[in-house]
Image 1: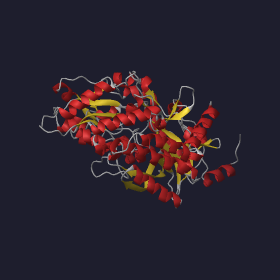
Image 2: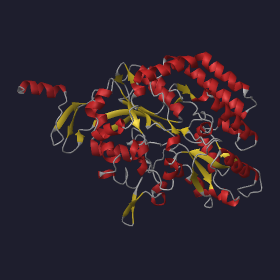
Image 3: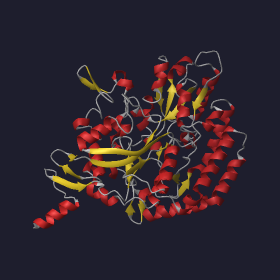
Image 4: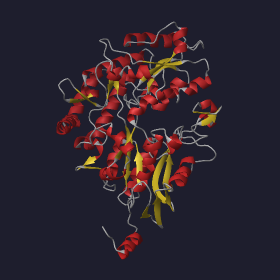
Length: 526
């Protein structure tokens, strides 16, 4: 095909993009201020292209040398390596809820950046439904690298929640398989002192917790320890201080839709097994095995109860040894923490909340003229960081998350500044880039057999679609009803009759509609 010189000049002046092969050439495009060109040979934009975003500064973020989320080793890398300037319109410190509220406020003003990334599933739905973000499935097909596409394809349900009218309006942020599945973490030094073994059943667990409460495992002469650290402020189904496995011993996983024997999807918190689990946890509180304050502890609060030496068991993901459990080891070198399988119920049943390998979503503003800028950035992370090749074969930044020691690269915290600075947290997608099936490379050798031996016990959420009409209108009310009922029964003076009343109200106030809608969605996708 021949193009006249005048037409070619017009296209260049108008800033249209020319795609070319990866062997060389350039791709002109227009940014807000001046044309930026992606040089294939150098692999960067020149002059630099700008990409705007927003960010949450949570308590787990650490910085060194006066760096910040807005300016750090990763933003400098993106500028120098890719010619992409990551510019934050705003950042906010606080909880996930704080970030969500700030997003809602700016959304109402129509003040959205080029790219928004977040984990909160409900807020993602709000952003999609605002109409301010573009269909991205076609962009993903056009621009995503083969490595990235293959990673997303590992979970066929990854896109489900973001589909509207046949289009996909957010890109799933992939995570490792089993990344937040709970296992038990137990004070082995307490077990040894009291001549006990790690519990294999709920009955054995009760015996261990009773000893941890009544036989002075820390040797301070006071009755000031608990058996199990639980986070219940955000419900039983959570990523640290989890108690989904207690419900699982009775055949249900709470706060999610599970497939019943007949194939129908049923809400786990309203099943008969949930009633038995609530009754058992109530008994544990009465006996002092659980702190009554657990009703108001969030995930980090439960972690702190264990790390402070006041609880002997906590349920959480395989990576907890690195954080926060390492804080206990640093404070008390005599403390020994070991992983253990989830205990079974009386009939041998073992169930735990399973992790969907999706950790949030990426939304692209309709006003972003050149979304390919973001894909250049994320493709590079998938092609090199997710695969641990090229410049990222050891980590994201030398002197931060890895160093050379005795001529060899190491990620040993004892050799890293500040015990290691997690540069992946500075990336737009929180973890850099992850391929779900690569989890086996991340699990510590002593933990892998325990986590993976109970793969059959991992029950994932079976409803992965967008919010149904009843969820939008009544979901918040039903969630509050559930949470308050469970807290009152377990941690206060409520009796089990209140569980039965909760199930009736849940069905009446919208749960029956949710059940119909969820199963209609399930049938439609089969």
